[in-house]
Image 1 (cartoon, rainbow, N blue to C red):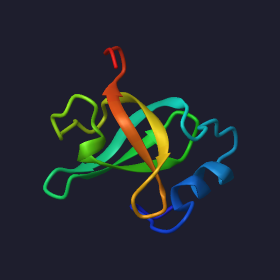
Image 2: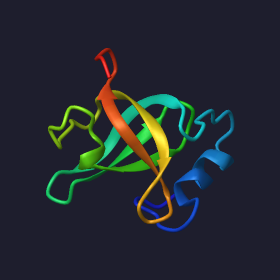
Image 3: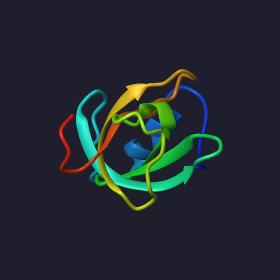
Image 4: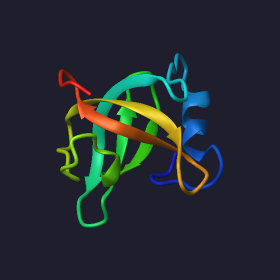
Length: 97
């Protein structure tokens, strides 16, 4: 999957093709921040079940608008503003929601 793919179901396509992918829309999942472009505020989470999901800095739960690459996180998969699936409510694993 190309980073920051657009269109309905673009991010979800990666999950459908990943063997053993277990990320369910609106359910909490875990993964690792794979990329984060701080000036643009855009990033990618690599889900533990396979596939990558884009996110915007406003989806970071603690409001800091920045998160380090490699950070283990939990998130929810939600429909985004551009008709694609996005990660929301990103929080480092081990912190309260």
